[in-house]
Length: 199
Image (cartoon, rainbow, N blue to C red; front, top):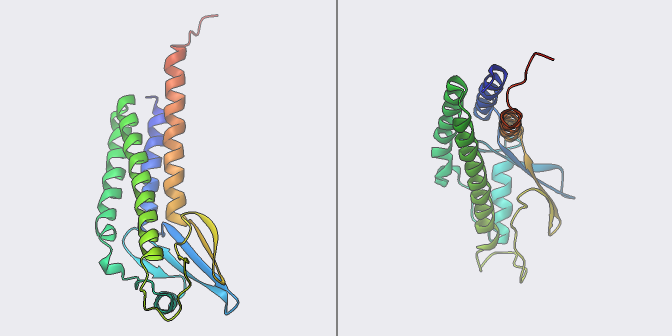
């Protein structure tokens, strides 16, 4: 790989460090009785409220409709995700240092596979919380489920639920895009072959 490509890959790998200081995802809830909204930030190793009491408030609302309590300590992914991201970061720096195209391809395949696995796991988590409801809940609406959207906006009773990447999530997306652009440029350069400086 060209030196510019190696620098770009190193930068993409280092972007992954943002997830340790910025949350990956944000889930927001708005309703007439909560005009300022409630929200959750999902980070690489924890889940916290958008405001100090939001997690408790959301768990209280969930209790009324039969959803399970959100207990961050009971979510195993929050224990091993920091290590997976660290492995991806270090391997990206190794790829940049070695500068071989097959290494970049392998790193991107690993990156994309991990991203899809994370999204599938997030969907499964939301499905479980939104569908496996307590039949003895105080509020029970036949046929109603409360799964938040994977991404975008969804109406849940009188709540408007939104789900979007947060700072760490956008950093992951940027890192992946940079890696894919570098691979595209490298493949195009290899297909064109060496450029002669002699007219």
